[in-house]
Image (tube, rainbow, N blue to C red; front, side):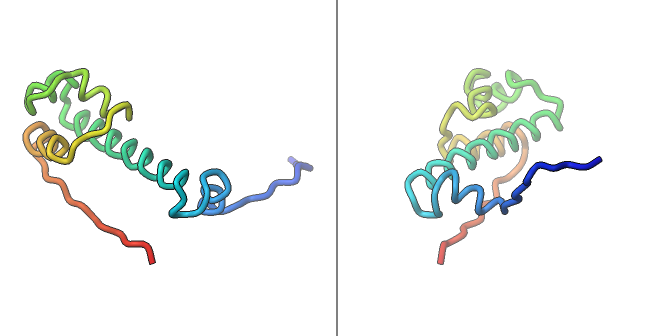
Length: 104
C-alpha cells in the first residue's frame, strides 16, 4: 500500500521541545511535574491491582479514603511524600526507591 502523505518523524525530545518548550522553561517544568504525578498514579494503580485490592481496601490499609486513592490514581491530586510512602509501605507492603537526576 502506497502512502503519498509527507510524513515528518521527529524525536520525542523534539516533540516535547516544540509543544512545551525547552527543559527549564516554565511550561516544560509544568508538563514534567504533571507527567511525574501521572506516572505515580499509574504505578500505585498497577501495584494495587496486582495485589487484587480495591481502592477502598487499599485506603483502609493505609488510613486514607477511597476517594483520595482514586484521585491519586487518576492524576487529580498532588500527593505528599509522607502519604505516598505510607500507601506504598502500609497499603501495598512495599518500599519507595527514588532517583535524583540533575541537569547539566
